Each structure stands twice: as C-alpha cells, then as structure tokens.
Image (tube, rainbow, N blue to C red; front, side, top):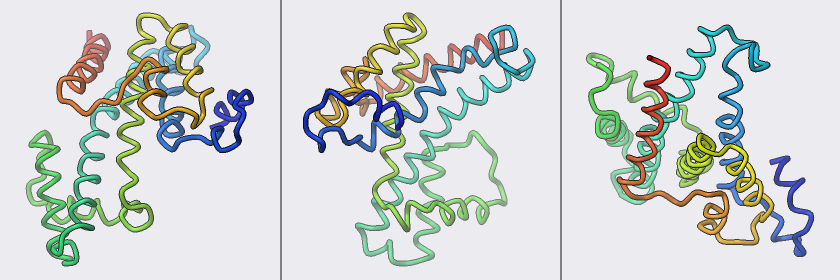
Length: 209
C-alpha cells in the first residue's frame, strides 16, 4: 500500500489515485514472492540456514496452492449461504461447508472421524459475517502475484518494472488493464490455472532434488 502512495503522484484526479482492493491485495503477496529467492540463506543476505531456507521456501509454495482450495470453499459457501433459503439453517450450513471442503480439497488429507473439526473451520472466518462476497479478491490477487513471480524467474528486472508500472496507475484503469500492465491476466479458466500450478510444482521439485 505504501508503494501505491509513492508511485501515483502523476495521476491528475484524486479519485483515480485510489488503490483498487485487488491491487492492494496483490501488493501483499508480490513482494513476498519477489524476495523469496534471496531469503534462502545467509549467503544472500538472509538469516536462514540452508535447511531452514528450503523449509521456508517449500512452505510458501505449498501454501500458495492450498490457499486456492480454501478461497474456492469460502466463495462458494458464501454465495450459497446468502442467496438460497437453505442458507438460513444452521445445520444446512454445516453440511454445505463439509460438502464444499470435500469437493475442493478432495481426499488429500484423511479427515476420518473429524467432521466436527472440519466444519468448525468456517465459524472463525470473519468475512462471512463482516465482509461477505469479498474473499474472492484474495484469490484473484494471489493469481496476479504468482504470475508476476513466474515472470521474475526469467527476467526479474522486467517483472519488477512492469509491476511498478501497474501500481503507478492506481485506479485510473480497469482491473484487466492493470493486470496486463503488470504482465499478468485475470485467470478464470482451468488451463491458465493449471499452467500456473505447474510452475509452482516445478519449483517444489527443485527443492526436493
């Protein structure tokens, strides 16, 4: 957010200097992804041992993928809860959450005998109660951040330059144009998602080599 404030002085109209929520959200993970190669160890100015650097890197990559399953669960759940009569029923809400968790998480984790604990996850998600229909922005922002990071793997300087150009536009352009300026796009198709996840998987493979 500070970067937005510093990069928008040339925009004439005050309202066009406002930060879009999605770009603000992208501004959180992008620096994390950009810095991560230099977190690796003390040799690169960091503070991790080599083993801890690999662990941290793996955690960041794995969390990026796992987050999308949670984001999809939250968005689908709130859409159902606020737009159908069944959403008013407490027991129906629990059943729906469990159904969505099974749909998006699959059987990657064995939750046998822990349905109550799995259901309870939605109870402490504040967005359902305070900011409904907002959470999907985090997913879109993470997709943008991953694309900027992917671009940085081949040309770090160019990726950072394009990202800063996008930040400098503030709210003066539509969101698709902001993402395009940053060297990214709004991904809503399975093929685009698959390509991005494959990059993450390839990076994880290098850590396990």
